[in-house]
Length: 67
Image (tube, one colour):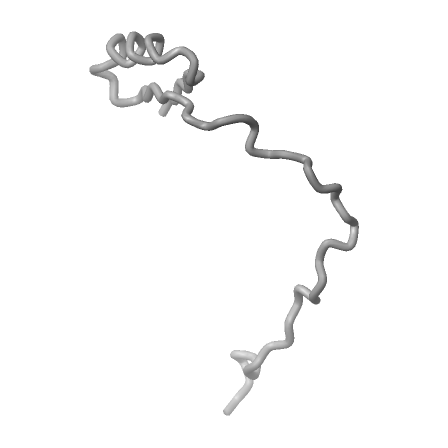
């Protein structure tokens, strides 16, 4: 599958390409509707981001234990 993503400032290009590849199932022409960059670095990355322990103790006995 091929995706052709066209910038929001070129809607006529999106229409022309979509018409040109109309019969093909392996090509999609998409108009990008986003405003600006999604990945912003507004806040600095802290090395101690995680506040809780990620590992937790199991609440049940192991599966191979005989009951």
